[in-house]
Length: 263
Image 1 (cartoon, rainbow, N blue to C red):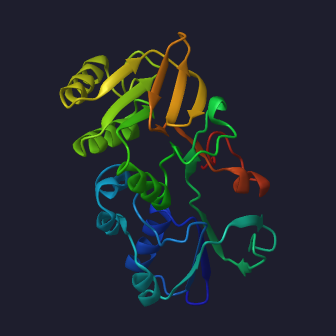
Image 2 (tube, one colour):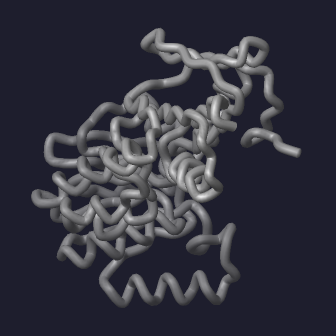
């Protein structure tokens, strides 16, 4: 094991725990971490909570610091995107041209926010997604001048952000296409309880309505809904699910189907 090279592609929560586990298990070979974000591995759940309230709270998300990685003798290739895996040569190549061989390869490429058709091509800084530390920083910095936030998506992330933003005294309206909150993950009584809890804190809901069009106005964002009504706010957060990042695995000839298929 001393001369083996383990390459971890993906610098998120899974990639961080792979490195932690290798250390606990006493792996003595070379470890190379390649991540397309410039940040060392971190956990994403706090991004919709304390990290939106306080920039200092971002430190709570850290799984491994740059110092931790250096102490563990992990080679960190942060800000690098792997674009090709050569399984026969057992190498990975980055967009920058850097290459590295591997004896074992860990794919922890995660997912990305789903972008609905009505949002395609929109570049306004009033429109937000929430997946990364940088996404959270952009949303947090914008909240100081925000009076009303529209959230499209009544799942867990949307509700967590709604609770956080309401605690800052900002008006929040959640638009959800399904008839109830978190419909795919909880039974109806829990959905009802969640709605009642959030309404008790001042969150407004528009249920059973989907977005037809997003229009940027000089003073904000307007969402035109499928019933002909419209909702206006200073900015909008879109959180309508995630899409697994399987392109790299598929290019390498691995079987994929809404994720990488394993045995």
